[in-house]
Image (cartoon, rainbow, N blue to C red; front, top):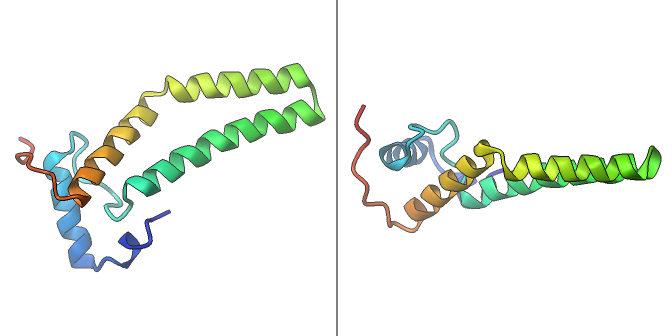
Length: 109
């Protein structure tokens, strides 16, 4: 899941983008620097939809209360998952870099 303009980056452009992200991100160098903020948002939305669809499927074929419970528990776990909020932060960082607003100093190692 990459943004269409980001999918066309050359290896040198990806390397440069990875260095910019590494300079401002507390997570360091990204594995896939070409995935922009929209791509990260799309992945998060996809995962949330999978959980909700699983709840609906279970509710239709097995038990309505069980389906509701799966959807509610899945949504709560999604909202309180620190990895989700870290991904939101990484998307925000990449958005700032894409807009040319990154003025952060390189991370100290």
